[in-house]
Image (tube, rainbow over all chains, first blue to last red; front, top):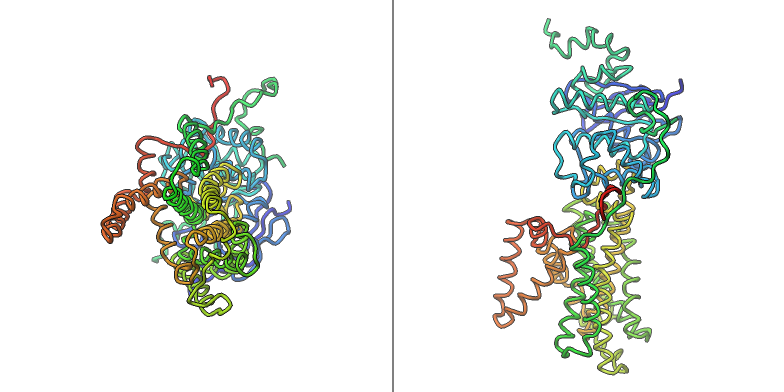
Length: 241
Length: 355
């Protein structure tokens, strides 16, 4: 299958700290890729490089063979990359519906009337329909996380970047969110999902990559990766000999 | 590839395809308060325009000032409240507007009132290169940078002998051919156009597609950019539009003041007044600057006989509001009483519910 997104030799350094070191990987259309790794491993920076919040020092990023690493984040969104932030960034002074409408009109480029119909469908799928007229600033954490997801979907992405969307939620809430994300995946949208709650990730992703000290240290089938010695070392702290 | 989520909705047993339903929602954008607001604004505008027939000269003059200061405040509200651009150098464009008045009316012999829109255009044109400089700066550096740019313009004009340098010059000769009643009425009408126009303009802009993006930028720049809003381009438009407003006000203000000099035209007082009105009233709301103007000019009228006490009271009030109600007086009242005279939101109402 041709790659939807290809990251080739991406590097990012802050001062003397190399946060991303020669990272290469690709995602196929419709594929769900999980990203795990300890805190500070460079996972979010990887997302920022793809979404355009941060420019790489070296390397290339291609979306369907088109270079996107010099584009502004808004242009990458219009090209088909949607993202959620680890700490939700709702448009607090706007209604939930309007939050999505920004994505639908500017990201997906549809007219407002048409956008409203789409946004209502997305709100229904993400469990926010009852709160569509609420101010986004008044939402609970779960609903803010749902809103991050819904707003990214409103831009009609082909690739969705989810940054610890399940973090801070209860088990039941995580379960609900996993179902929603699985549905999104089944609709044909490719997903890259950073998550510490590994069981949530394992329920959805086709493939897993492990990042540590800015490098990809393991990549492959989720259960095999989780069972590997490298991952056990990182997560169980067994490298003390 | 299909991205339509409704197609991928839960795998229910295959049901017969539903007939295409009419849109189940209608968009509601007005509230009871907004109908009151619209009616009040319409009536107030008519009353203001008719002032030359029912008010005395002193009131007309004061109202003109209130309205053009309100216009200035709305431009800064747009800049800082929606665009996230905390400029401390808008006096640059007021001053450039004042000097555009000098050039167009005294030097080129155009009608002084025609000079008002031309002064706005001049300020907007100069804002374009100015933006390329100050937009390299962020946050507090942007604020300081804009202030420095204003000082640069002040010094440039102070050293331009063609514009009488630091002495300034009188624009009385450009007004001599116009009968007094017409002059005073036209000043008021232009002030109404700027004051009401800026408020109404902001309202209409915020209700539009463009306004959706502006409010998103106000709430989170990073998220706005991530959902496809071209944040830098929008900020640029906002900066240039605000410069237009300041330039037009600068020309109008100095038609009433009759004498243009660099220290008055590029005075920091323009800036502090704008900030006071917006912050006291409520930043990022359309009503805020209206409330701010009422408080500012109300206090000035009440304390007119007490000299410097007026400044002390203003300063104390500003400090108090910033500490106790950072959302401003209107913001505070709106939250307590759920007021919204200029609603810019879209609320979806199910169609089967009553109107």
